[in-house]
Amino acid sequence: MKPLLVFVFALALLNTSVIAQDSPPNAMPGKCYAKCLMPDQFENATEQVLVRAGYKRLTAVPAELEARVDQLEIKPAGRRLISEPAKYEVVEDRVMVKSPGNNNSVYETVTENILVKPEEIRFVVMPATYKDTVISYVVEAAHTRLEVLQPAYESVTERVEVKPAGVKWVKKLADATCLGANPDDCYVWCMVETPAEYATITKRVNKGCDGSGVADAGCIKTVEVPAKMGTRTVKKLIKDTYIKEEKIPAEYRPMTIRRAKTEVPIGEATVTPEYVTVKKNVMVSPPAIREETVPAETAPFNVKSVKKEASLKSEDVPAEYITVTRRKLVRPGGFTAWREVLCPDRMPAYTIKQVQAALLKAGYFQGTPDNVMGERTKSALAKFQKDKGLPVGNLDLETLKALGITAH
Picture (tube, one colour):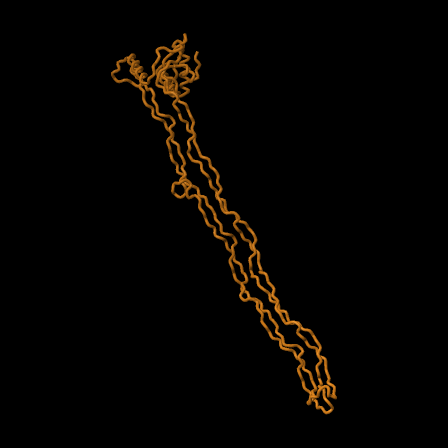
């Protein structure tokens, strides 16, 4: 049955277009060689996979208000009217108190009012009339406030290929027609496909703030902040100042006068007329109105105005990645090649014991080491070789080195 197994194995090797050599190249005397099934050779390559895209983190910067002191008019500007009285000058006047006459004149005594100050007009200033009125004024100017909302994130899973699909050789039991006495003779090597290997990663996707699914959509909200108002009592002009005229009657001085009933000219008079001196006020300038400007009255009040409008501050948030290790096929296996192995006469029980101990430590050998290269040891050794990407089929020097054993 062994020739049949060799034939099937050789046929499989021909399907891989690999031509086996009949003897090892560059063989050296005293060393042993065997054909081993060569595994696929992979190279590990790390790759950064994006799990969350970079974005700009926005922070709302509030409007900057500037406090200052303004003057609020509490009484409007007006005018002041000043009445300037008439100016007089005192003069002396001679008033005849006894008229001229002669010895035959008959006199009578009369009382007359002598004008000592003429009639005049006096200007009386009537003050303006005000009414207390409550008014509103801006204490803090209207401005805009920006609110930055945090977007919703959705977790999305994605499969990333970490090892490509390939082929491998698998030892399988032949059909029931196998006539070999030894069960090991009834195995054939078959090439089977190996599926690709994947790793599942979770990504965070920005879905925005308004439910549209667009990244960062609707995440900036503008709020209008109304002005803050205050109230103050001010004086409102109801009636402006005006002039009211008053008449001041003339002033008289009563005097007793002796008057001849028969008028006699002074040149013919034998009785000399008599005079008295009277002081009179004579107007030298009429009354007048002088006008002065009265400035408005103000009171200080605190107010806040917008020095700088609200704005957005942007900060770059880097993207997030995870490291994925991909196994890249460097050289496909599935063919046999000559490898140096321990010669049977150089494989003492001590070496087999070392192999079993190393496989036991690595978790491949089950049971108690017996220093015999039996089926348990061979099976554990083959599995170790496959897992570590070593040539499969014999205890070659490369496998010994991987087990940490020095060949002697």
